[in-house]
Length: 496
Image (cartoon, rainbow, N blue to C red):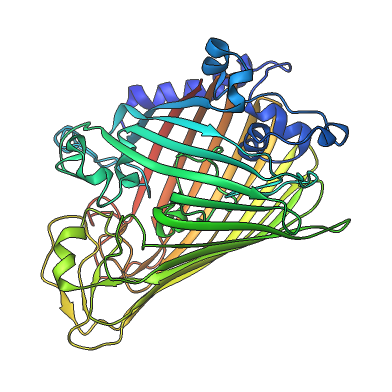
């Protein structure tokens, strides 16, 4: 990290709190008033509800996303169509890299699910088009304490992402074939990509305590942050956890059903179950279906949420399809076999708000890729690059981890957050550590500052290190050359 950038980051982190005003209006305002994360509040604010809910709670302030469209066409048109955008720009510096290495492109891409160059860069612009049905449950965020609407309703949503990061959101057989996305992940410096994460229709049914059916190109919500933010990047932190990286929010073609199955003074219980054609592929690469689901418990004041999420699919493909999918699916498929080899992940997340100032989240997760040990079951290296000769007789791999974060809301528009993680990859299967069989830890200190309703800053410092380096293994960072890494980072997010 050069001295100029480090000074810039430190000054920015120190100066922003001085600029914050007690009356600042940002995405944090609704979350502090209601005791829930801003991403969930903004999703709730987008969902129209029956007039009977007005007596339950005042309508939250409309989110900044969609404000330009509402200004141009009026609020009434949003009954049928709403359009909004999120744009992110970032500044990222790390130790180790020389100027020549920086010029190769993507050398700062050391965080799961992100493709960042060193220095100042354009992350993405996410534009969505939607009509939300009246409902008290929504895919991803889960249940809300609204009375169940009595009428059938419908809606739709599509998200288009353009920029440096959206390559991981491309789908084989669809957006990966678009010319702008060729030649895929490569050393092309600052190449931008175009991805589509959703193209779905919704149907709300007044069944049980409210049921929502989604169909089309769906995002997989079984990620480490459940319920996840509806944006490509986390709300509190600029970077992702390794747990989230191994449970990437992939897209799939299929159907998802959300049900409110229990409601009382003790809280809400809801489920969601999805079935699709594998992940990140229009057609299944092995002829088998994929499954994803979540079970929620949430208190009626939305202060506490407990969620169990899972996904499972056949992690192997036939030899004939291997060349089509390898490296085009973010190394998601690494096993070739004529037999079913289960690829699965499980996550339990508990989040709690300790009053208006403090909130926390902790997650435990584990996953595995099965292998029957037969000669025709071949595993290929997870290290990015052209396919190397595979290793026959694969006997499987597993991984597990724990992570958590604590947030202090100093003001309505100013939060400080600390996150810690330990991730164990004893079989060297993940695509993050150059094949090292190791345990990796990280600490992330970040700040979330809303300059106004439409502009958000997130400066931070992150440190990653190995805790059990073995001499017969490569190091986990910097191309297998280092056992630790530092990063200074900041991004600015615009909502319109």
